[in-house]
Length: 290
Image (cartoon, rainbow, N blue to C red):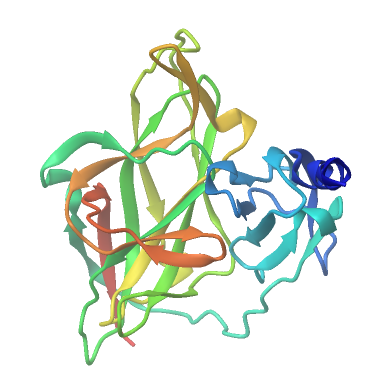
């Protein structure tokens, strides 16, 4: 009887390969670079630029969370997973305002000059971390983000991509609602030829114009989130001794600043204790006349 029970349970716990495509439930178009977070965080993965995904080392009882900008989160078990995944878009009813800017733009935050370290953000799977930024109290003027810049490190010989996301902060400085409904995808190219297994720090200065996004800087503060995307083009083989480890490229240079950092895992935001590797963001703001 014990042997029969064991034979019944073995298939349930065997690893399975999952694959499929993620689509917009209204337009029917595939959704690129969707983060798929699993009940085993080391197995998190992403969809590619065509919305396709493939993952291994998961069992039928594992849970997946499809979580990306502009869509409602979807939770499903591997056992109930279809090859066609539909995500419901979030309808943004707020219209974009015509803003009138002052000519003066102000450099607000520059972490690139503070204790700059040689450390970088790194991960072996899809990873989403949100970094808290203090707000600005301005009773008579609206303050919006103008530019965000940072240094990136490309570890591969291919064009890498990463995702920038923005979230509101509540009164307790925890991660709240996502601000944008369209993702900001950053492409990082490399122009150097090198051995595929040789770590080479190609530092590129990336600057993103945020004026059109009209992201307000509230007094409560907000979060800037970096999402490392686990797709084939971003994977880099790194040997630690005789052990081959896959790392996700690109990564961001960091500086030694203690702040509140949250990581998205298993469908929830969880605080990271003693986190002092803050991306070396440089942020400028603009003041509106209205």
